[in-house]
Length: 203
Image (cartoon, rainbow, N blue to C red; front, side, top):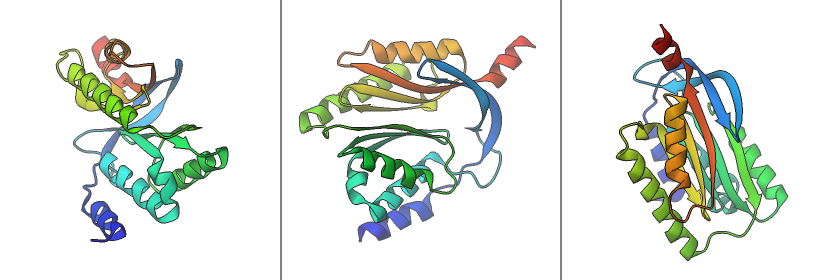
């Protein structure tokens, strides 16, 4: 099967999840931004894209427009939020990557973590994969964390976390797991706090 046909099949077979809009607090780079985003659940508004479909659409777009960018991009996707991590040849390639991804219909918040740097070596990839696996495992076994609400990607020792925390405490627990994992050089977090849960607890 040709690559283009394969990606078309992936996109067509992706399930379309629906969402409910809940107020959330964004924790991005230490800055708190209150807004409204689509937090995924069992039902909601039709027309939203599932996280798997978002990834498929991005891969398909880059494959057709610039495969070199596709080869230089890692994605962290959760609850419709997209963090684009890239090791680009130059600034122009960083700009092109973000323009292509942001032009895809149906994608919500897209965050730019592309930079001009060399691609990871085979050794980097093995270490990064181990870091990601160990963090995911530690979250899965922590009863204070709903681990399925997070996506984690590691590139050259830098851990990128995106997702939705049920409380600021849960967010801090998640970040602590990442920061204390051996081999981690830095943690970049794009985490939303579900404000609806906070309201329910105060009633």
